[in-house]
Length: 93
Image (tube, rainbow, N blue to C red):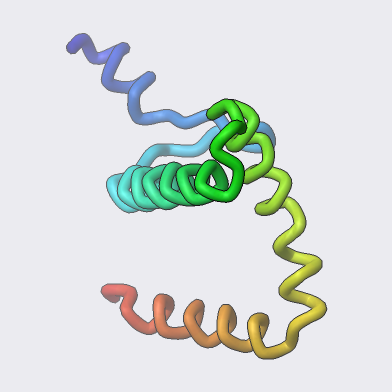
């Protein structure tokens, strides 16, 4: 791999930002993609006639609605905040 290819591989373009793809970001992205894949699999068990792309679109719509669901359920919101605090506490300093 050339230096230019390495540099391009280390940069990730998001709709609102361009960021350096750190090992931590790569690992987190891989983890999230795996979980999203499993979630789409689950959606297809609810309606096996959905095409894969349709299940992905439905999964994206569900994800889009999660913040409102969390805000309407204080216990869920508190649980997420608690988990975030645990994750922050595990940071290596």
